[in-house]
Image 1 (cartoon, one colour):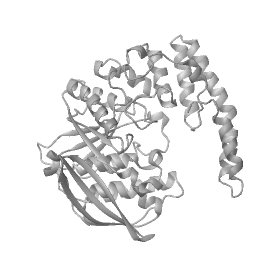
Image 2 (image 1 turned 120 degrees about the vertical axis):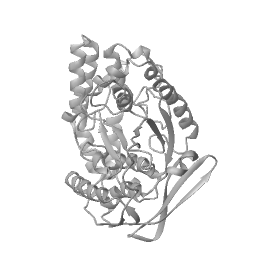
Image 3 (image 1 turned 135 degrees about the vertical axis):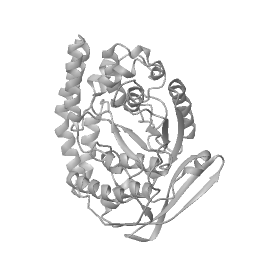
Length: 401
């Protein structure tokens, strides 16, 4: 695959940087990838190939195609991405280590006074924790200057109204903490990158690509960790992968893996602005928490155990529905361990009612997992796919996912 050309367009108060990408296995087709920012950033948008390498490398590895970029690319980033490809290959047999062909160079080292830090900020638990933690007066923190919020990842490009509401709400946090809020957008999830798994492989690369498009602004880009060091598994944003997206000029930091979700929420819950802005749910692709899905319930359980759920205005109901908790279908490999810890937390917090609901969910999921596994195998077997669908419907009936 090859980055054929790039261009910049400024209109309606926005600057859009567009790259045209062609694929070796589709010789006659090409598509456009783009990043968009407020027009006041037009003077600092990079001319290097660094963001293009960050976003295209996962797809090149997934397709097994050499990656050609006709722009200067930082030598350290090339070296790092080769390391990332080796990690991806160890995680996923399909991934390949492919050649990277690019011009050497880049924007050069940052000046001594150019020490700004941007945090990718979704309003979720992890990014809220990283913001508040790095605002504390203690050794080892990295003060945040700007918050980058991105449309096109969790809130789709088609939902401009939802994104504008989301930005308005996150403005509460920006004003309370004295940070600049930068609304960005990208179509990466609408490109062929969709063929590679977003969650498991490339969402960290996508974040870094957005930030590296503004690499002339920042010495550091911070990605909030979703997992504790003791609970790591192959994932698109990972403490082994994210730092490998660094260049000689701009460091990519993976922040917050020293604490689990409930410990982060304990700090976040002390912040008044967080009570009005916490956003954990993207099931409906909007700016609202649905309050019904597994991710909403997972966070609501913790907030209930901390005794603060009724203070959060971003959930439609400020009470925990234990019937819904008991019907959670825990299908991912990490979930039984995670919910087992939540059950023990409920016991330690003297909430046997919550512990019982979690235990029922664990037992129910244990019974249904073999059925789902069989349904998936049937669905992938030629001629038997139609047998897998009713099994899935039966397992999903009455379940919360």
